[in-house]
Length: 381
Image 1 (tube, rainbow, N blue to C red):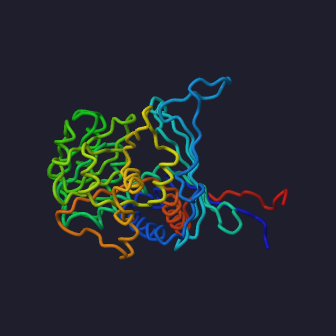
Image 2 (cartoon, rainbow, N blue to C red):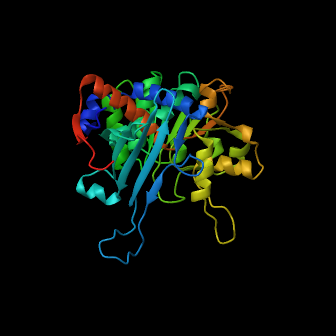
Image 3 (cartoon, rainbow, N blue to C red):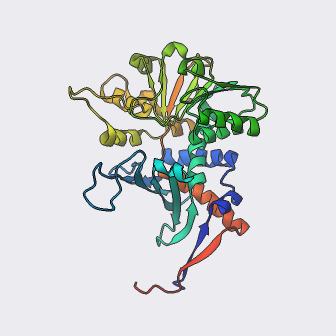
């Protein structure tokens, strides 16, 4: 047997040729992946195999010359995973992030992904992952909306008009042709990101007849059939919604951080759904914060709230549904036209492996990318 190892390098243009921007297909792949997740045929990092990843951050005042200083979005992150089912693939997304990149004309985060053979560990592909990550992030809310929205939703609200909600929008529009009004809430009605989202919608979805740039959260969420939250703000400055603003039958999809002014409303009046319950249990172990009086601080992540509600005895664990249970038919989806549903969606490395594998297969099929040689024969073995 030959010990030679070649692998495929895929640049961002290569990934585009391989279909990384095909949102309809991405939603389909994420749906399959969520079923695989619920069946338990996956492994991620951490003690319970549900870790988001491993993060490297820096001290506020480094004592060594050349060591980076802590700053906004200043980190490195490794997100490894194995995904079974129809994928049978191991891989990892690795990225560095720094808000100062924007001054250099670069994205805040620069991402790469690798795919590896499950048996030997040899590299199969090394690929640009900014678009991959953005598309898979938006596609999961697309799966959520496909299965849990009211029939023929008309009004969509985007809380946070950044890249994440741009791809979420692409996912929603791939599933519904009934959406005719889109409300946008940025830091202000005239913010640059809100204006950019408006331009994007007009250019890509001319069938949308009403685009509303909103100055308040209340204006944005009233009358919405779907609220897509993907805010990126400082701690505890996320949107805080009031129950009376929410339309009966509304589907709320949280990919970032948000809150309700009335905790009891979340406990009693909202159907609670998550993508992966054990992941939020791990979030609590790592990220939960308390004040000096021993009071739990708001996390802004609905999935963490749900775990806290279970742990505090306010609800039963059975009251929190995993998306995969609905896809497998183990639990019912929407139960009525008036039911208010809030779904917590978090990033998982298995998403990158799933969509990365699909793009890799398409690239091989079409002869896209550059074949690189690792070795003809290993020097050491």
